Amino acid sequence: MSSYGKVDENNQARLEARRRTRKRITIIAVSSVVLACTVIGIIAGTTTHGGKKSPENNAGSISASVKALCNVTLYQERCFQSLSSAANSSSLSPEELFTLAVKITVKELSEALKRFSDEKSGGKGGNSTAMAAMGACRELLELAVEYLNETAASSSSHNDLTLPELVDDLRTWLSSVETYQETCIDALEKATNEENPNLKMYGETHLKNSTESASNALAIITWLGKIAKSMNLRRRLLTTKVDSEDEEMAFLGRRLLQSTTDLRKIANIVVAKDGSGKYKTLSRALEDVPEKSTKRTIIYVKKGTYVENVRVEKNKWNVVMVGDGQGRTVVSFGLNFVDGTPTFKTATFAVFGKGFMARDMSFRNTAGPSKHQAVALMVSADLAAFYRCTMDAYQDTLYVHAQRQFYRECTVLGTVDFIFGNSAVVLQNCFILPRRPMDGQENTITAQGRTDPNQNTGISIHNCKISPFGNLSGVQTFLGRPWKDFSTTVYLESFMNEFVNPKGWLPWTGDSAPSTIFYGEYKNFGGGASTRKRVNWKGLRFIGTKEANRFSVRTFVQGPKWLPASGVPFKSAV
Image (cartoon, rainbow, N blue to C red):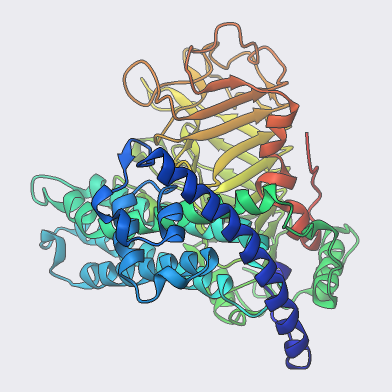
């Protein structure tokens, strides 16, 4: 967690002076580019982006910096209106304007949350499905507000990092804020019926301002990050000396990987069904984990099947859960969509606390194929890692919901869209096993949900093995389908068994896919890897090494910044 760690009081004055000096240099350089872009924009006339024109009648009252920043956003009218109306916005630096954009989004999202907290809102009446969807929305919007506050605090904090150095973190958190709102609308759409016909419209109406503002803030920080990078202002974080806290966490990570380690000696908490530990359930053990701890809490879970619905809450940081092996330590439950639970809430095991790690465990949803969406593992936590774990279900097995995630030597079994979500995630050296679905169904391995071109999200499958689980004769199996308009998925250096359909990819609807998706294949092998008969989509690319490395552990999830402390092995690039 060193990228936004605390500093002690003794060093505060020195670090503050350094931060101000570096920030002035950054602001001067970035502002120069901003002003240059503004001049070009003014000379060229009204600048356009995404087919949306900036309002000419406001041009005279808008400062140069505000105009330049808003011209890179998707929702320019809202950007001009919100930033220009703020006091002293014309005198703010680009970094300060970004922080202002985030704070405006916090205000709008907080107002939306109040509406969803009204028990009579949305016309949901007494319908349990609608009430469950509204409950999921409240939880999602609370998460969004929390990450917005963290974004605002980090972008204006007094630590030793400039805003350009925090771009990866800020983009991740803002991407997640958009994802949380989109997940809310998805839940309302699925709960919309004759009894509650206006649920989806209610969500879209009351989240319109906050979703547009979040998108604009994301566009601004993405653009500023590109400028900073092009001007070589970003420090090389990967060569930064780690502090003693990082070294302690790395030492614990290495010990966890040693097969001879006696876990009882280093575990903070022991869970055992047979009563030989302090706790018999994981949920009870998690209650005693310290809140927002910067040190690891190691939970040793002895062999057995734990039938419970488990949540690692957002204030439970740096939890490490270690089992006795895949298939020996199993967490199992059966919540599902058909029986009235929103997909977001069906997970047998859900992770929200950042810095989570699991090793040698299985997560299972027992609902079966007839219950449709039934998640085994959902992860909505930043910097989460899973090593030698199994996710076992049918439709929607692994919900890589949001933030940055890494899976190594894991096994994932499922049928329809069984690796899905909108995080930045890399699965490396994993076993991906499609299984037999319901009669008449087709298997789709991935369904990625990117909704905004500026989000830094996608599914990267690297050096994995894709093979059938059991007899799949007569079942069509595809690499994935585009869930949202900017769906992003790549397969890199992976083995594909010949059972993979030669077309490779399946449309979500109709017979094609949006031109805005990015689907990539790179040096895959095996009978199903041939690209000769792949679908003819504009968004499908057979990429080279440079582009493949955009989706590597090093670049896509910034693995070398945080994975070494987990002890999980990884390969940085293709």
